Image 1 (tube, rainbow over the protein chains, first blue to last red):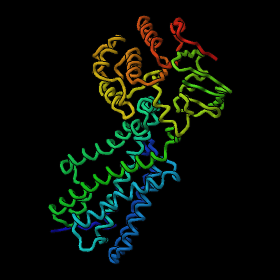
Image 2 (cartoon, helix red, strand yellow):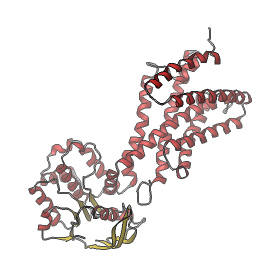
Image 3 (tube, one colour):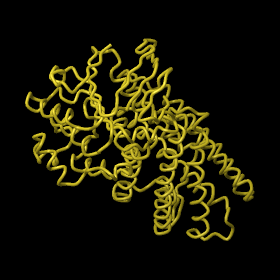
Image 4 (cartoon, rainbow over the protein chains, first blue to last red):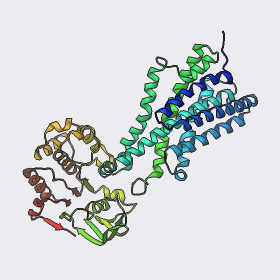
Length: 257
Length: 204
């Protein structure tokens, strides 16, 4: 098999293609060029550093370091989650942290133990990429789910109050917005699962195949990962909404602005 | 019984109530008909524990409204909001949901009772098959009143529930409220409420 190797030199061929896009943006007065250049620059630098770092970590393969690395990833995820949700950090940091950590750590251990059947549970080559996959997906789903939930309550304040008076229970009155938040996450995931492979090959599988893995191996991993991601996202959203809402309403059941 | 005792409330720097007191006795019907913008809705929201007064206390049937008694107090009051703010879903589903709430297990709701109420207030059975946004203002108001009656709570608070009804239906709703043994607080600009001798009028 002839595996073409991508080098930094060959990446330049792709970067050059950005030039016409920049020109179009200038012409159409779409002011995102600065952002675009900065984003590409950051991507290249960050990934290169991560690559170097991972190489080092994989060679060490020390369980303690691996766990510490995963903990850092969780922290970063929680911080950026809080930022993107427009939430008050101090009050909601802990609930969000738990929402990221619990489902991902559980699934990570479960996955390594039963699905990947590793001899050594905290093997860096599995633990770190899988944790990244789970946390990255939790991040987007927590942002969508939490925002949908609070937007629902905020935009429908009268509805919420009327139903609070009818039900006399905050949990019952919030349930419709909770369902909405959860569905906003679950529906796209299920749609993605349904059409996976028909339109586009998922990123991880593409990477594996390009990297030289057999398609059937790549597919089995993909199915395993999709299931793991689905469950983690689902649980993470539930936890994020439930735990943050415990701190987001005052004792008279009003949303704290 | 509802007792508001020396209430102060300011909103966005505007004083709505200052040293305000009002007592509604058990079984009494009170019509609040102050002009718009004088805080009628805020008054209702204070009774329901949605808005906390800056000062003063609110007593609902001998219980002072506080964090601890909030659920007990709210459980005694049935509120119909101005636009009957139900979620935009199927009417039949919403009714089932409302009467399956844990605190509503002792309501008067049965499909038969619902049908009788709908007949009393001239509400077509087809309404049940519609979604809330398909209802007219008058249909919503009657639906709100019906839900309120079936919930069987001791205190009713009705915020403009007759504004979109025709004369005959207004009379029917007013009569039903005046005849009930409940404590009723009505917010309305409708003169017809005034005509009923059973109702005390309050304004400020």
